[in-house]
Structure formats: C-alpha cells, structure tokens
Image (cartoon, rainbow, N blue to C red; front, side):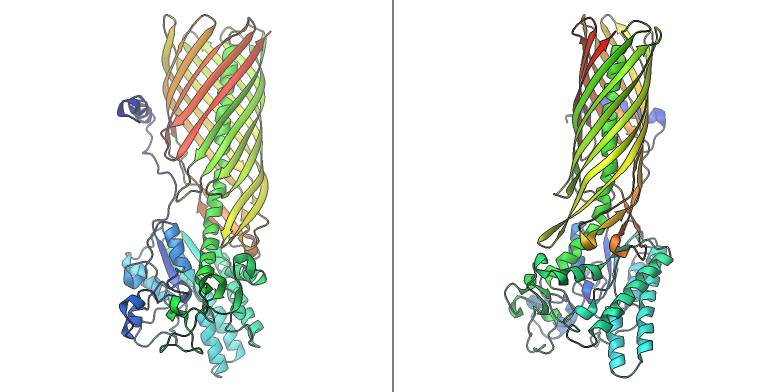
Length: 636
C-alpha cells in the first residue's frame, strides 16, 4: 500500500486510539522463543562428539556421528526445534539440547564414558538455569524425556544380585517421582510449556523382546509412566504429556502402516574396530554400516533400544500434534466473529430501508451475504480458510418519526479448511436478533442484539505420522451472544451527507468441549473454550442522494480491546485415566484493522427496496476478510 493510501486509516486510528486511551497493539500469534531439551540418549543431538574425536576418528566422520540413531539423520528433538524455527545443537556446541546419552533422572550413570561429565537431568536443568539467571524463559518450549537408564541400571543391579525385586520396583518408581520433581523445578522457575514424554514399552525393544523378562520390563515401563503422569497431575503441573508408550504400541501392531518392514532387529551393523556385531551402537552408525541401504527408513530400531531416523521423525510429528491440535482448534472460535459481523451489516441495511416507511407501517426484508475470512498459515498458527455465507429474514416497523424497530432470524454458515492440509470443519449458526434505530436530524444511532446456537460439524484434523495421515474426527456445538451499538452525525451539503461514525461490537463465543476419534494415540479431548471480542470502530461515512438511489461509503479504523491471552485446554485421550490436561495459547489476531465498505440503497419500485454492499477488512497481518451482501425489502 502506498503511503498516501495509508494516511486516512492511520489518522483515524491514531485519533480513535488516543480518544479511547488504548494500549499499544499486540502481536499476532504466540510463538516459542526457544526449544530447550533435557534427557538421555533418546534426545541427545551429539553431546559426545568431543569424545568420539578423542578416539582418533577423522573430523569429517565425527561430524556425521554422535547421535543415538541412524546418523546423520536428525533426532526428534532437532526436528521439533526446527519446526518452531530454532536451529538445534547440543549444549556443548552452543545449543539448547542439554540431553546426554546414558543420563538418569537424578543419579550418576554407569554408562557415561570415562572422562565424560556426569550430567543427569537434574544437572542439565542446573546448567540451563545457571545460564539464564536462574529463570526459565516463559515463552520457550521445554522437553523432558528420561527414566530408561534408571530402568536399565536397576535391572543390571538385580541381575548382579546387588538388589532384590522389591528394591528394583521402588528404585524405578522413585526415579519417576524424581522426574516429577525436576519438571516442577522448571515450572517454578517460570516454564509454562513443558513436553513430558513417558517411556515406550522397553520390554518390546530388541534388547528384551525375546527375553523371558520381557513382560516384567513392560510392567516396569508402565509403572514408571503411571507414577510419572499421576504425579504430575497430583502436583497440579499442567505439562504437555506425550504418550510414546501408546504410539509405539500402535506401531508394533501395524508397522507397515508406518512404513516399517522390520521392528525386531537392528538397522546398524558393526563399526570396526570400535564396535563388533555383538556390541552394535547407534552412536557409531552411519550410511556405511547400515545393514541395508534403506534401513534408516524401514527399520524401527537402530540398535537394541534406540530409534532409527524414520522412527524419530514419527515421534517428532506426534509431539508436535499435541501442541498444534489445540492451536488449530482455537480457530473454531474465530469464524463466528466474522459471520456475526456480516449478519449485523445486513440488518443495518434492513433498518435503513424500514426507516423510509410510513409511521406505524411494517416492512419485511430478506438479505444474503457471501464472503471469506482467511488466516495465513505460519509458525504459531495452523491457518484457516473460511467461506462465509448467510441469509436473514426480518421485519421492521417505523414506530415514530425518529424510531424504527425490528426483529430477524438468520442462518450463518462457515466452511473452513485448516492450512497445510490440516483438516476442515463446518459451522451452522441460527441467529435471532432484535434491533432498533434512532434518526433525528443529522444524528443516527443503531442497536442490534443477537443470540445464536452454533453447530460445529464435520470437524476433521489430519495428523501426519510418517507415511500415513490419520484423521481425527469430532463434532460439538456452541453459542454466540452479541451486541452492536453505533452512532454518527451527517452534515448535509446539498445532496452530499458526510460525518463521523463510531461503533462497538461485543461478542461472546463459546465452543463446547469434545472428544476426537479415529486417530488412535493422537486423539485429544478439547475442553470448552470461550472467545470474547470487543471491537471499537471510528471513522467517516458519506452518502449522496441520486433521486431514488443513495450510494455510500464508510471507512473506519477498528481496534480489538479484548486482547487478553486465550488458552485452549487439551488432554490425550490415551491418558484420560491420569487426567493430564494442559494449556496451549490460542490464535490471536492483530488488534488493529481498517474496514472499508461501499454500497448503494434505493427502490426499484414504490414499495420495493434494494441494497447492495461490499466490505473489505485490511491492515491485519496474515488475514484476508471481505464479502458482498444484498437485501430486498418490501414495505406495506
């Protein structure tokens, strides 16, 4: 837009904001400022590369190894970091992935290489907080995935006769309780968004799958998970739970659907002279020692317990869906705001035609509206494209020379498609409205009060997990109560009328809670959400009388005053028994916008009136909104 075209909207906005004493505009959508990762080898992005270099490996080889997977493929923590716009790196290479292979929750690890630092998760968190002045950035995303090494080392102690079965159980559950304490530390330091992963079924990994103790190890994994998530819920810690146990159970039940042809053996071979066929380690696994050229993509496991590149990618997508799902569903509450605003515009046209009827006489009208309300996809929002349509039928009566009243019924519709092929939804809203208008001399005022029930139907959320796309389906209902007040004054200069106009539009949208189905471990429960809007507008309206027709134009600067941060509460249905719900920031649009409307009112016959209008809302980053409306009236 050229500077001169911005002049009028900017001037109107500055005058309106100054008169209302409003604060500075808010940003568009919440976005994580960083991704900070704590854990063990499942989240290690190459912490041991200096150790690998000490073994005499060439630098170019060291650079491609070090992750516990089919190198040089990324691990899930790197993929999630990149998804949210953060360049990933291990903490000893200038990054914020503090995870270290072999780490336990709070205890020293027997699997840490000689000469390497002992860095359990508790120490990793110490390091992060020390580097950040003792505070956790409240706008960052944190992840914690630990506990497997506590199980491994306690199993080894049991096998060596150092502990008994009861001590094994107590130690493993104690580690889960200790992890709750570490998550609580992050929360107390200011962290708001913490992904907490439970353990996959360790008993089903190649390390234990053919072992007689497999079922016992499975029970240990499940016990750890129950203690972890129940402990978080009991402590009131609203972490974002990632149920990898349920995810990997589904993969094992149908590996082909996830692109895997082998879920029992290793993708990695020996790396002489450091590892042999009996000591295979994914830390020393790259393209040269895969058992098959495509093993990184078709095998589930890189070695006895660590995932391949393809497996890590699925974990990353699954974790992202726990965040993106609630963000996506926050957009459900946005479409009714736009459709209600369009509904009010058509009722204003009905009032204008009814104002010319004789006192005590009725007029009836029918109106229709079609438009679009699109939010671009980007980091922090899934985006959505809404096709809006509406119709209304109503009656007005000119109660006196100055006052016109009326009532209307309408149905508003929105057909929405989430961005990036994320799914779709439809809304059907039945609206009942009472309205009135006052016109005295050059002054005019309007009030419209509406209530509605909203049917959210055919809701579909697509979740990509490797080569497959799962579709979660749901339906729910809701409501919208609104009030619209406007006033203005027309200065008449011959046939031209021009003057200031102000308005405020209050809306309270409720989307009732619902459960998804059809997406397995990715299914979510979404709690009831509310969206409150208070849109203030100020600007100029002008019209020109041409016999039976009156063209008009209106330009207003708009400001949303209800810009308080809104959250959507969700819970994985696979964890409903533990009650681990969490909160994700809802989509938030720019506060300021400019609305330009043009139209024409007139009569095609003595009793038959017609109104046509076009509106366009601009000056909001990432949003496109416009539409047409038409009205036909008959006065008795």
